[in-house]
Length: 210
Image (cartoon, rainbow, N blue to C red; front, side, top):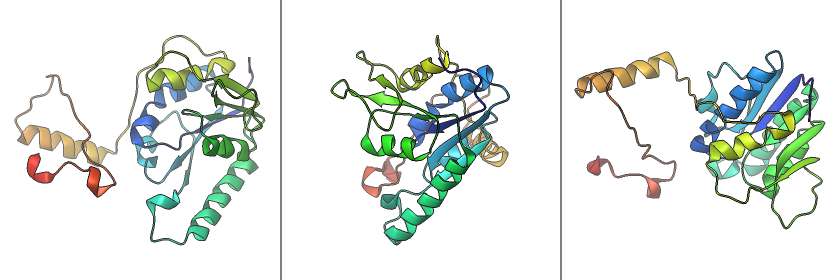
């Protein structure tokens, strides 16, 4: 079990939903290590989901080349390398590769230069150069919140994950309140929201069917 940690880095390369499912793990680390520096490596597409999270000290943002097809790929890769070099300079104690195993996630975790590197391996893999504290993929199906939270077990953090949390800008919050008020939705009543948008036009819900 890892103890007396001064800095922990989360790596979340997925889209917004999976990043938000990481917030219970981040909060649990903050509660166990209140004075530690907590950083997170995210991409330009999902960064706003954790922009105001009080549990996070540092947000590192890189760009996926497929998100910006009009940009020169070498320029994108060069900028991403500079982000990783900045992280390496911070000398994190632990880096946690959040999500199912993928070679690219493992590679990013390794490139952080963290002393301890935690992440999932498939059962078919015996060891990993990228993860020096590997965990095998859970055999039973787990919610992404639970899967991510389980990665904290080497830190001595177990049990039930805390709640998911988001901290939108005050201006955005007011826009939603104004919209709900104009739609006749009263405060205090249960509210269920669906995210029906996408960066890909072919995956978007047609406006005329709203």
